[in-house]
Every structure is written in structure tokens, then in C-alpha cells.
Length: 340
Image (cartoon, rainbow, N blue to C red; front, side, top):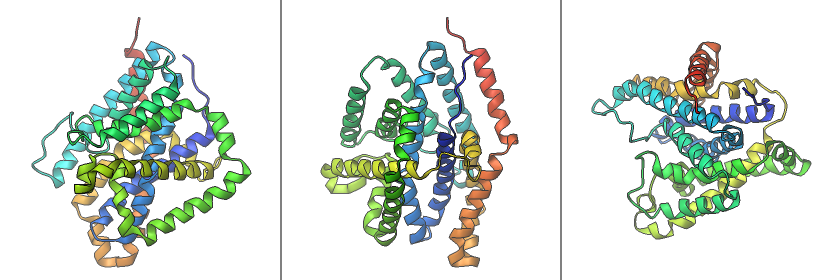
């Protein structure tokens, strides 16, 4: 069985992004307490973190679809993880929503990414002989038009699949080594930090007017649901969101170093275990009202302490204890899935 040599920069990217995923979910709890800092950080993170995660998955797509057996194993892996994560988080969701019923169809939480990967890898395998530029153009057009359909939503993550698929195709089109080289040229190293800092300042100073982009970045709703009576101009907002994500995403990728730093590459290697287990823990922390406790007793320090808890959780979930189930599961998939 062939294996891919790990790319330190790509592992660093995934490590940084999984920190952003966990931090973003933690910050969402603080938003309910009208914290503008939480809202600003949340909007900043959501402008790039999931598009870049999907983009990174696209970068690694080509190897997985070179043969039918590799594709089937990858598909079985993601499909199984999707079902397992839905089963894992359901009891924790019931803590705060006692009337909730279990459904594999509605994907409104973290499992959506795993389901989307099933869809994206299947599309890539079926379209592997089609010009990727045409695939990207059609994907962008479909995403822009999808917002006009009020029936598109969380059922099978249909809206998110359409909105995020262009980022997967864009990653699929890129060569990792060439991309890494271009992003780390001197001019990018100078412009990228300045651009990211400027965007964060804009988010911080204009959060009330800019916060409308929050739900465009998540890609879950129709234009009418997002903009009420102004839904007809939703396509302009989605285009703007895509442009912001592209610019900030390129800058973030440029800033992330090519060498090992702060064990980011280790977090990247274990990103699935962190992604898989962090949400049940957060559901429980929400159930016992951890953030309200911090807010009540520490006020302005509550956000910092809440983010420290998020970082500690990331470090804990990156330990071998949480990685082992995925190694066992992946080995089982490799043994069980065979295509003649």
C-alpha cells in the first residue's frame, strides 16, 4: 500500500485550523453574553477556518481518488465517522435540548464536515476526468444561485455542501509544493500579516455593521433567511464573502511557517480526534454553565479564560489516548473494504 510523505507546512496549517475550529465553537457561547470581543474573534475566525479546512482536504484529494479502492476506503472512512460522531454527540445535545430527536438526515452541527467530505470525494472521483477549471466554475455558479432556494438548508448539509465545494475544488486544482513555495515568497511574507491585522481591526471596530457576514461564512441559509426582504442582493453578499475568504485565506496560509513550531504539526496530525471529541465536551461545559460562571466572577477576563480552556482541550485531545480509536478504525476500514 502506498503512503504519502507528510508535509510539515500542511500539518501546521491543519494544526492551526483545528485550534480555530475549537476556539470558534467556544467563542459562540460568549456571543450570547453580548461580548463584542467574542463576536469580533468569532467573525474573524469564521471568515477563513472552514473554507481553508475544506481547501486542505482538496489538496490531499488526488491521491485518494487515483484508484477505485482508495476512493471506496476514503468514502467508507468518512461515512462511518459521520454516523459515529452523530451517535456520540446526540446524548450531549439532549442535555441542553431534551426534546431533540436523533436524525442522520439533518446535519446542523459539527458532523456536517464529515458528510460533506463524503459528497466532495464522490464528486471528485466521478469528475476526475473533467477539466477542473470547468468544475470550479460550475461549483461557484451553483453556490451563488443556491442561496435563492429557500428549501436548501441543513438536510444532508445541502447548503453547506454547495457553498464549500468550490474551496475543495480549488484545493484539488493546486499542487501542494508549488503552492507552498508561492505563498512563502518575500512579498507575501510582508503583505500577509499586514492584511490579516487590518482585517481583524475592521472586524473589531465595525462589528455591528460587519456581523451580517457571520451567516454567509457558515453557508447554511438562503439569502431570504439571511437578509429578509433584501434577499435578491444576497448573491452580492456571497460574492463578497468569497472574496474576503480568499484574500484572508491566502494570507493565513502564507503566515503559517514551513518548519515545525509550537507542535502545530502534531496537532495537525491529530486534527480528526480533536474535531471528533471537542464538541461533546463543549456541550457538557455549556450544560453546566461554565461560561456564565466565568463571566459572573471574572467579567472582562472571562473570554481569555474561556479560550485558555479551549486550548487546553485541544492539547488533551491530541494525546495518543484519543488518537488510538481512529488508528484502529482506519485499520479496520483498510482490511474490510475491498473492490474487485
